[in-house]
Image (cartoon, rainbow, N blue to C red; front, side, top):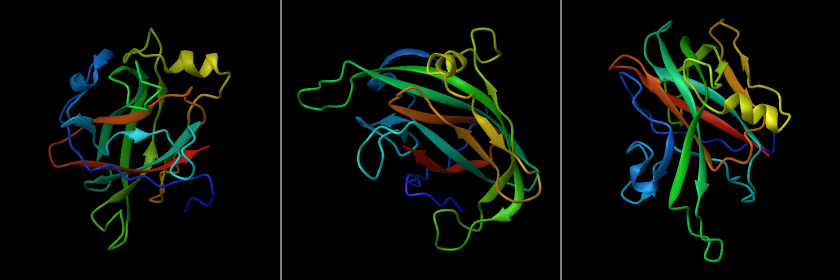
Length: 202
């Protein structure tokens, strides 16, 4: 589906959320949302920007969302960026504090195409065929530094591939300014589970 030696698939744990409740700002690691950081370690819901191939920091991502939901069901989402601060470079330990900010937001809508049995995306996962995106600014509904990052790095805004024809859709973020990681927060019905294939673009 994604044919490039620079793409490393990542699958987050499916999760559900009725409403948004993460908050932006400077946080000690232990104060990050429990769905991201628990027991002194990050969960696999953090999308690391370190390349699985060579350890280099990836420039951007391709996100292909799926939903365990009925066809045409949709969920709202926010794409968060995390900056690590206060890392010990000598011992290469993880940062002890982070800054979280919203890069953008939109809606994922499920189509009818499903994954395959015995694969990361199973037959209960429906590929979203429609994706929307609005970058965050100081004046947007979900305020955040997304627009400023794209401008500062002279990068193109994130783009959506949204065919709305029951094939897969995707969100392409070409350059996220050297962030430590990304996370997707969703708001939807109690029985809707979000997952995603993520390609790291180096």
